[in-house]
Length: 432
Image 1 (cartoon, rainbow, N blue to C red):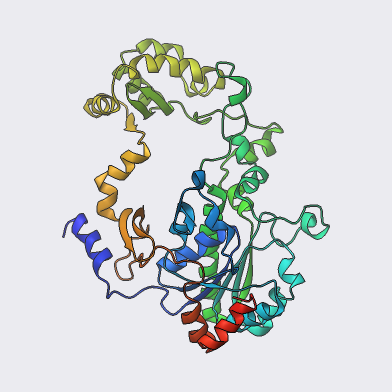
Image 2: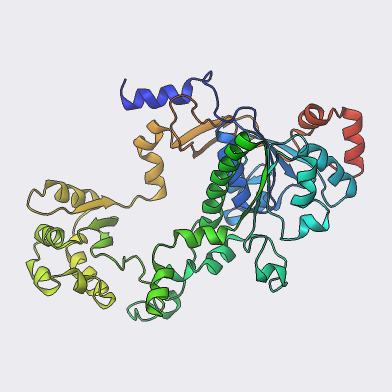
């Protein structure tokens, strides 16, 4: 069986078991894709995820570029609504909180992203919920976490967990973008720059899902649940390779260097005739190989060691010289020249794909990294597929999203035995 057939088998055999079959997850995230992504990962693996929104729907449904929506939801929420049952519940009402506690009693996992202290105000914090369900694994995601002097002494305003705040507070945003002393660029562009996607939320959500699984393993061994206090800002700090350590060792802040890598050159993007290419060749023999391909042995003499090549003052001059070659060729032609090189040293080149080119790259479709999905509520859409290719318990996308409150009847009847008369009354009262 070749790789294409293997992946097709994993994604099409519906009878294969799901790794988290039977695990009940309540996702009461509000305005946070950190919580949404965490429950998405669990849902892909087969968990029974119940997404709880306010009666009017979660504000996360409105977070979309240029206001573009499919039915009632923005583009980001449609992806993170996958495989989840959607119900509504007004947690600001006492009756809504009573119903929520009944659901908690039947759950394995609870994911919440309310501002620190909100659940305590509602008498629904960890200490209360663990009394209701001692096997519960509860994960709280918020910028500053649940503890620490800033939280305990009220030094921060009550706010939701915003990705841009996470990026800024982690120090990550400072490391992205052009530095102030790159005078070749307009002044307004030489500023700290947030990452284009919601990296803190997605990294924080992924780490939360991992921590939840660890807590479930502990519960299997001991029978005890636990509370996970997760800060997406701290997650970014853990990914911020050497910027924090550099300050600790030197007492100075390492500066931003745009698309350059402070530890290696060449290891960055270059302009081609039809877009951008990535080229690497930073160890001395590899730098010589790169310079040989572009016919510039003088650059080897001018920048002979890694010390010269990683001097930030040399990044732009070196790039300018290399681009005298790369701008003459298309990305495909550049990659071909690199592949044809058979001399000493190792240097690589690759195309920087535009989004439309990524979607057309057949490799990702064959692996199921990108899928076209016919959803009964939202129509035919192209979305990201599942990431883990597991031979015995493959992750699956069973549906993309659900309208607000679409599963109220099913879930409230299944978990709490409510019939339509009870639900209609709760709806009239603004509870669901």
